[in-house]
Image (cartoon, rainbow, N blue to C red; front, side, top):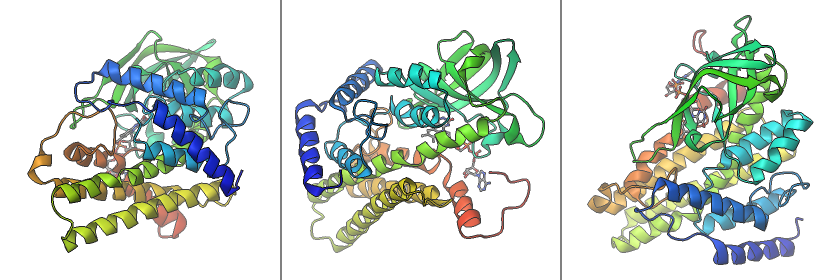
Length: 393
Ligand SMILES: Cc1cc2nc3c(=O)[nH]c(=O)nc-3n(C[C@H](O)[C@H](O)[C@H](O)COP(=O)(O)OP(=O)(O)OC[C@H]3O[C@@H](n4cnc5c(N)ncnc54)[C@H](O)[C@@H]3O)c2cc1C
């Protein structure tokens, strides 16, 4: 469906749904963690039933099979309506889906994809205290004993792990050969004996992610994705998802929130301040450019002409714009905005400028740090010399 009239019909259909159903009051400072979880689950359920939760899934799933043009319309409207970002379900609908769809066996797909639509929450257990940028350095061990793997180790920065039912887990089954070779990809039950989750309290007051401690956790061999020792290749499907649609959605949300900066300009009497207007104009252009780059990236991916490093460009363009957005808001808000009110989990463009400013730095790291993305662009796109041995991506 690329016809403009059809797209406009979809747009007004989504808009009517949002006018009737979008949650309100979800940013109230008095809301508890339980309120957050309830709102997220209710909102996800409504989006699934309306057919707007998984437009990027295949057509056999309700609400799936949408063209890229349709997906953009849906994300634009969701961003414009200022409804909650689906923090609790983005790992399941994006990363778990992409991984299972591309690399899972028929039984795993049949078992898990419908459960995701019923609201099963997933988290991603990749990073460890000594393995983030250098992900292949993971030390968490998976030892095969009959029909199970026995897992020992620690994961960190696992988004929403404290609420998750399942985990996309990378563990080492062998230390022979290059470090990528001995990694195995497993689906772990977060309620299994031996799993301990400890939320990490963040500077802006919420607890978006957690540490996961694994003490003799048993995972059935049937929960392995791909072959033993071939998990590195499977992990690329997860990571590609992280750098694709998620960033498009976030970019659209930032564009939808530019009105908050305009409001500050009016409220603080800056309408005639040419310097402020110039900075706002620069920001609007920057955010528009990020949306265009994210669109182009996805078009290229769908047409099979994505280049190595394209995703890194989108990632860095987004994190820079996010920092510029929140820094301008903080500056224009003056002293009033120096107070940091509590914010809703993982919310990014809240208009609570101090919290937004603090939080904007998370995106210079999440999904691979800015420096590492620059290395990728330099080495793999611009053909510049590779970094000296000892520094590993
Ligand atoms: C909001 C958020 C959500 C996250 N969610 C998850 C999640 O759900 N699951 C998960 O597994 N992980 C998650 N992460 C972890 C994230 O993937 C890692 O933080 C990231 O890959 C960086 O790893 P690190 O923190 O170990 O930093 P390090 O790798 O230790 O890097 C420290 C510093 O050194 C720099 N550096 C490292 N290597 C190089 C190099 N070769 N060249 C130049 N500079 C370099 C980095 O840029 C950085 O500035 C999340 C992180 C954030 C911020």
